[in-house]
Amino acid sequence: MTRGSDSDFVGFVFSALTTNTTHFYKVLRAIAPKPARGQANGPLDTAAAAGGDTFVLTTITADGIAFSVGDMHTGMGRLYLRRNLFSDYSYRPDKPPGYDDGDDDDGDEHASVTFKLSLDRLIICLQMFAVDAGGAAGNATNPAAGGAGVGAAAPEDASTCRMIYQGAGHPFLLVFRQPSTSLVTTCEFNTLDLDPTEPAEDDDNTGEDGALRMDLSNVALQLIIAGRVMADAVSELRAIDTEVLTLRAARASTPRFALLSHGKIGLSQFSFPEDTGGGTPLFERFMVNAPPAEEEEEGADPNPDVVVVNSYTFGQILKAQDAMALATRVSIRCDAHGYMSIQSMYELGTGTAIFIDFRFCALQDDDLTERLERLGYD
Image 1 (cartoon, rainbow, N blue to C red):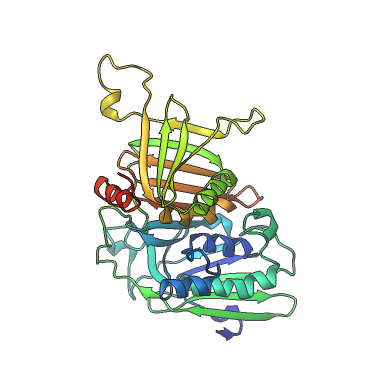
Image 2 (cartoon, rainbow, N blue to C red):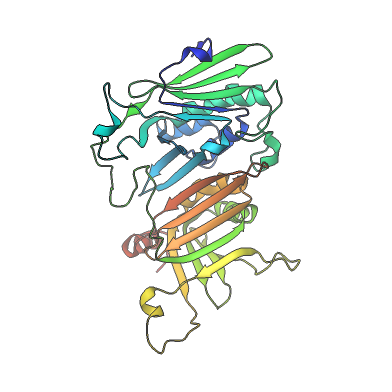
């Protein structure tokens, strides 16, 4: 950590300025691994419980910056910050000396830079300097409690945070400036550069930014529901020590949407009503699609009752709980292969929003049978 002027940094690949970082702190915490039950819920506790730092895959493009954690086996969380969320955003691809744009036949070669850094240390830094300087973080379940959003208008004396990356081999920097005192504090984070010529792990299932690929041409289920509703449901499932969660959605039969909890205390079902009790529909959107082969069968019922049933390790789903609690709306999608996306929309109150996307793989038949047998199910 150093103190100086943020104008000292030149020749950067990436630079972005936000006038209030409270929301940035909240959404980064939302993708961080969660400690086990009974442990304190803080960045240092999370790192200790995991046996070390959690590293986040960071991808920068001309359109925004993405932070991804996890893998296809344990679930993946991805936070994407569009450039319009920042009051200032600049990206200059890191090209070799003497490079000429005319020499590059592949225009995408320098479209992004990717590296890893410690998510735990990044969150701790934001908690120390951004939250304390810019106001209390507020209740994690109340987005309005955190002040101005990322890139939103803020008081003239509000602290600012500039992200800077000077290219391969350089640290990732957060530069905090407090106008009232002219104090500038710089936090440096070591980066692990990735070899762009080396294929990513599970390359068939993940994209270049680490996101788990879904078959969007074959979506079996899509629904949109209030974030607090899903967050409360996950809290109840956690309270009864759920180990395997089965999601069931039906096109026509009731209940249309239910969550089945498999745990040591037995089987429990949480059925969602059609409305909130006041006549307002609970689901903003609800679609269950039949597999393409069934849709194409001649003489088939034009309105069959299609049921989607997938099971997941509950510990994976729990990773998305903080994001759900922040969200105004949550979109849940499942493709025909069992991959599930839980996308939480965190509104900033300025006509903009941040999307936090978690993706999970369904348990296969053998894994599901083994887990249920261990819990005492036949």
